[in-house]
Amino acid sequence: MKIAVGLSGGVDSSVAAWMLKQQGHEVTGLFMINWHDTEGTLSGDCPWRDDIIFARLVARKLDIPLETIDLSREYRRRVVDYMFEEYRCGRTPNPDVLCNREIKFDLFAEAAFEHGAQYVATGHYCRTETLTLAGEPTYRLLAGSDPGKDQSYFLCQLSQKQLSAAIFPIGSLMKSEVRRIAEENGLVTARRKDSQGICFVGKVDLPVFLQQQLKAKEGTIIEIPATFNGFVRNLPADLHGKLKTLAAPYRYCQTDGRTVGKHCGAHFFTIGQRKGLNVGGMKEPLFVIGTDVERNIIYTGQSDRHPGLYHSALFIPAARIHWVRPDQAMTEGEERIMRVRVRYRQPLQKATLYRMPEGMYILFDEPQRGVTPGQFAAWYDNDELIGSGVIQ
Image (cartoon, rainbow, N blue to C red; front, side):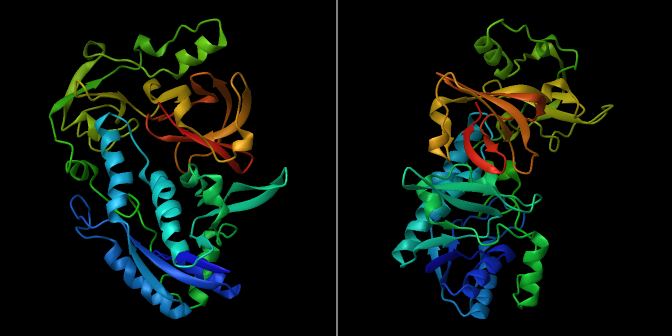
């Protein structure tokens, strides 16, 4: 088969390409350039300039062609501009999920097919399987075998069409095995550190990065006591009303707490954040428990046990629900017990999903810390990712 590998200059994609070459496939490396700006990056440089050197060395070692594709214009429009707008509205997006849906398995895949490829491979730690249902293929997205590296969450918005052409060669390997294979076969990426930060942008000083479009504006930091009566909710007797009440965000006003400091802009902060508050003299660390971008106020609470950090339920509007397995889509009024995560590397949490006319309510068995508007919740049946949605 003709397979295009997204060769990123890291060890994971390098070993993915090596495995496919060993299996006898006709492999081509494709290197994506998706970002050129350096403002806000902690290194002060575009990470791809180093990455492409390693990608070329790996391609030379494997004796495969390497081509470069610049998708920076669409990456800015589809991923970065969306990210700016979400922060402007007080939500916290996940650019890596968007990058996979909009760039790697859409525009990049199209470019690969134009180069004659039949499939696209990446170095993600996840797996796929194919079922035949009613005579048609159905593609399952499964967690990677390495529980510490499983990246299925980042692919939670992929469609059946996208999965039909995707290959994940290292999904059944442990990270240690990947590095061992790279070392034994003389790949220069064997000991290279994993990339960090925003996909294709790199590690950033987020406020400085966001100030490209969002202005800094001094505001007030309010500390809300753990005894705030808004954390105790009077639940209606009916299930629908109970779910709506539990999923609603906590509401604060300035008179609910005390002023403890100043900040440079509420849109630069997210629920659960600790760093960047620069408020001293507290018995325990402060965490962000709420933001008000209209009034430019940050609400905080002391300690990671503060009740403002925890929610028993969340809500996803109907228009933001996505089914990786459309044949498993829930109908209105249906409820289903599944396992859910609301951020990468969070252990899967047992929860009950309720499909209502306005959307999906997810009620956790145990209260969850840091449920953040704008992030993705992904739900699993055992190790299969069934669907996902944007938290409201």
